[in-house]
Length: 462
Image (cartoon, rainbow, N blue to C red; front, side, top):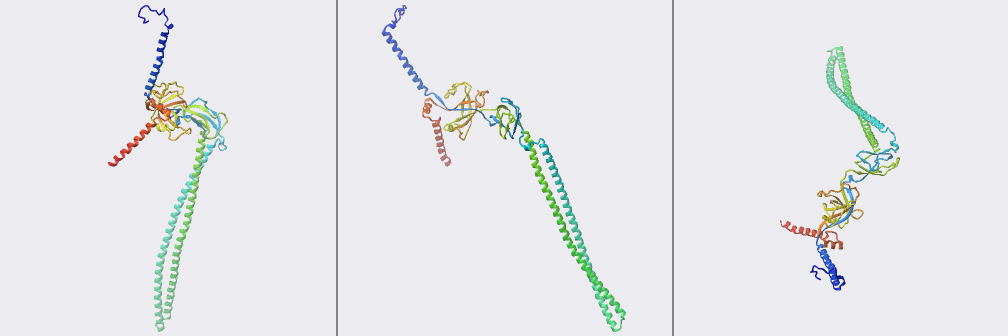
């Protein structure tokens, strides 16, 4: 039974035929599941205390960091008729390459010599501006000449007035002398008359003195008339001065009015010229918009307008271009309850569609085929789908770069890493539906509030 001897009976005795051996064998076999079950339960219990990295799972897609690097539509600035395509879908174009050509459909732009004729109108208006400028200068010179002539005329009349005043003074002196002579002649006549009456003088002497007296009186009258005429001439000189001032004032006002009219006409010509120049610039720029060019280097992904001869409206999309150079980013959407727990520079693990990966979300170091990133921005306003948008960019500290074969729009599954907790706590949180780090965030908030309350009295004591 114990198989001590070298001569074994096993070939001659079948132990299965004996009931005792069968019972003994079965009892040994029943103990193994129990042991395995116990070991399994112990293993599960011990695993409950293993560290588990909390994470927030979300889905999104690949995008670019800058808006200028995202797919954009090539639009027509003007309305026109599509005459020719220069590219096909999938072609690579450089900045400024021609995409399509449009022809004019508006009647006011049909003239093929529109730019030339408008340029001639601008030149004509420019010459008009110069002519009015010359006229203004001539009127300024005329005004200056009239002012100088008026001043000369005034000076001339003032001299004439001074001469009249001097002449009046001389005539007044002469009149005084003549009146004195008249008094002398009257005295002589009276004495001769007395002597004549006494018989001492002859009649001829008397008549001679009377004649002399009458002559002197005539001279006084003539001198008085002459003085009166001189005074009248002086008054006429004053009137002439006023008349000249008024006359030249009218001439100066007319000259100034003509000048203002010329200036106004010149300004109107300047405004018309500026308007024509604006039209000329618009016509020139419009002709450049007949050719639709690429706004940046990239690939033509889709042509929206297809038929030759199709009418294109202003601002209509013709094709879509994808820039050739861009910086990858991932756009994911999170629930509102998870958003307050996040901050920029949080670590994120990413799994891209099309790249095989084995993901263990709670043990990121054990995952394979995933890529690292960090949160770059979090929207402050909820999206239309009821979630908050989070932008994730590559982590520069990670040696593993994102695949270069990625395309914008590729699906992504993200795992935003939070704190490390035991597995039992994570299971309890999942069963209760609490967000990650809910209680930790509340504890930190209360602790910060307590620190603020404790510091406030200390500051007041200081």
